[in-house]
Length: 80
Image 1 (cartoon, rainbow, N blue to C red):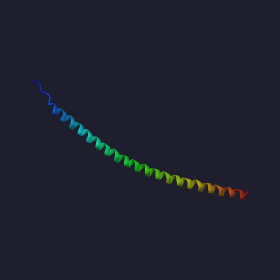
Image 2: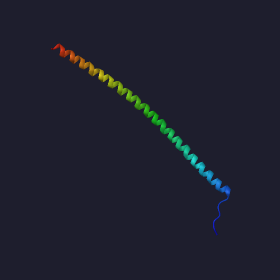
Image 3: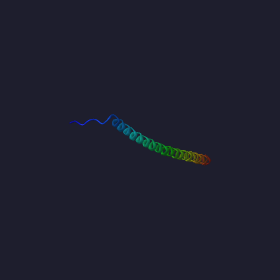
Image 4: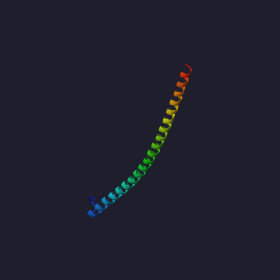
């Protein structure tokens, strides 16, 4: 004799349980993505700050080299 299908209520119960399980998985995934996003935003902020500091140091180095070159040119002209 062949096995009969579960009653209609049991089918719905199973489907609802599967949907509930999937919803919980999606809620967990959303939480994980939110946390990852928070970490990435923090990292972007740190990297941006570091980039700005390096840019300032680079500008200072350029001004220093330009000043040294100007001094060398003055010295060269004074020795001509």
